[in-house]
Structures are given as C-alpha cells and as structure tokens.
Length: 159
Image (tube, rainbow, N blue to C red; front, top):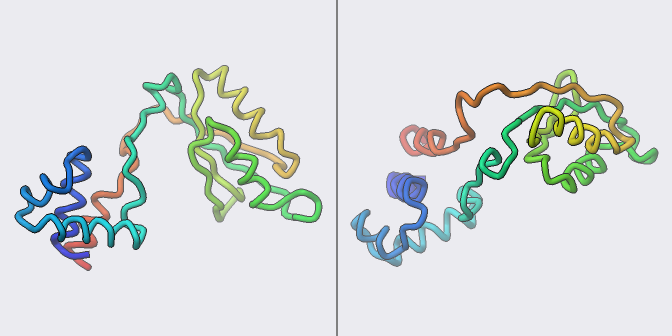
C-alpha cells in the first residue's frame, strides 16, 4: 500500500457513500485510477466489504459477552473446531468466533437482548455436544471499538 491507497481508504472510511467520481475529484487523480486502486485493494483482500456497519445495540442487542469454549477434539466422535464453527454460524447472536491458544479452544463474541436473554444464547451455543464447557465474560463498556483504519495508516507510513 502506498500513500494514495491510504488516502483512498481514509476517504471511503470517513465518507462511505462517496462515489468513485467524487473520490477522484477529492484526491486529485483520474477516475480510472481510483477504480483500479479500489479493485486492487478488494482483490488483495485489504477491502473486505462495502456494506453498512451495523450496531447490535441499535438492533436491540445491548449485551455483549465473550464465550471461551472448550471443544472435544475427536472429529470422528462429532468433535473438532469445524463442527463447532458450523454450529456457531447458525446462531444469529454469534457475531464472530476464533480458534485460540491458551485455556480454551475457541472464543466467540455474542450479543443478547438482556442478561436473561444471554442465558438463552449460551444455552443455544452449548447445544452442540462437541462443546465440553464454556466460560462467559460480559462486556461492561466498549473502550476501543473494532477498528482497522489505524493499522492501514501505520502500514502506509512504515510499510
């Protein structure tokens, strides 16, 4: 990524509804250059989507929790990460899941309508027999929201 890529990412991150023509005008480059750069950034996986960012809170899910899952490791016995991941993908309240190192095997970020509803979400997660045990931590406040832009800026500045 170079400076133009960084400026392009910043522009679309701060004003996602700006069109390619307007972006070319604001950046002082040809429309074709903007489109080619966007296509390159998307093809390389730097830009992963153009959809709106959604707020779970505004959708009625103000409770965020993190589940640490311990998983039965024998795939032949219905265990394994892939089995659990497929199960979690079917639960709308599971926002993301990651295989991890450390005390657990998988980490999942979930949302719920209330603390009482969180129990329903956890119970649904635990329906999968490949999950041996779970521990839950409830988030009280978001101090640093999910972000990647500073990382892209760092990449442009320091390669």
